[in-house]
Length: 455
Image (cartoon, rainbow, N blue to C red; front, side):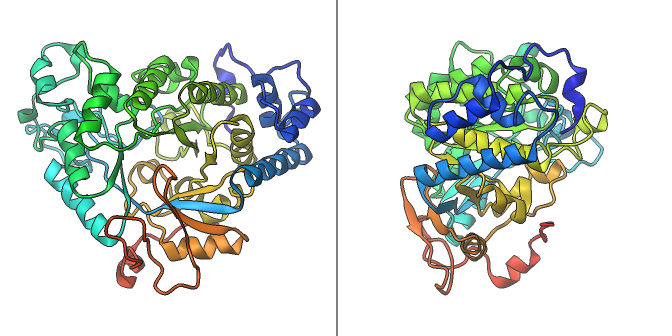
């Protein structure tokens, strides 16, 4: 990883009085790990500089064994589509190249830009087409468009002359995004499980009023929201957030939103984005926040380590970072997530971030889920990701059986599962409301999908 973290005067540093051997013994025995234990494992010992290859393999072995004990040899995936509603956003996160400054979307802006905003009708069309093809889930994570409100009452309450409201009337823009309720309802009416409204979006949906996260998630659940992506987490240590995303909610707000989603009966995931300015201790403190949240709610269905893709981000352009996490750090992040999060059953390996070969390797480092079919992916692609936008059920069957594991199509919350027969013909999804085993894309469509860069 870049040594940028050394340039910041962080209070949280990877120093412990624990030994690597003791931490590894606890991990092997299934004992609950302390933060000090986690720091020892993720660094392969604070008594050594850099990653010790031998010790690293011991951590990976322990994590793979724990994975087998908890979930067996199944590797899951979901048939899904991404529907990012808008790239308009003024938050200014330095790790992100997905957003476009919202001013560019105003009717009097004359220069061309690559951003987009969809109406609820357009979101419905995207999701309906995907449901017809066989998807189960739509994942929707979007920029914080200033015209967005939770509902019509929220829009009425927002004041465009109050800077803290970050609100502009919809008539200022070429395309009106309408409200979060309308967008969620449009996607839900199309027939998919709606996985949307991150804690950051929920914060945007109650700005300027005396509502709070419970009001937001209760309203959205009534509109058709089914589950919540625990993104916007980045690193749940505020001294890191102050560097990479000072305009975002703090760690306490993220946790409060996740608790509210749980109270509304909405399953959640949880993520970490690492490999930028943070250090190893920050990563383990993040895991500790997630584990504490899960102890209280039992609502987190999976943990998703996301390795920072740096190539086209402000952090890289401004010289704050010179690269992302190393292969060894990626392996240890997945492994320690499995060992530390003793109350979260599923750990994901993201082929969008890692590609096929490395993604499969991480399935032997403690991960058991291999993400989803996606069909469309914008966020990582805009940051410089090179691993494509689509995986078919046949791809999953081939790759997962090649490493001696069992491919399993799943629902978003893992309550529905179907073992995939790799010899079936055709090979397509079956859990979605319109799924009948037909491949998501015709052969000609699949051939037009971007080639992957898998080593």
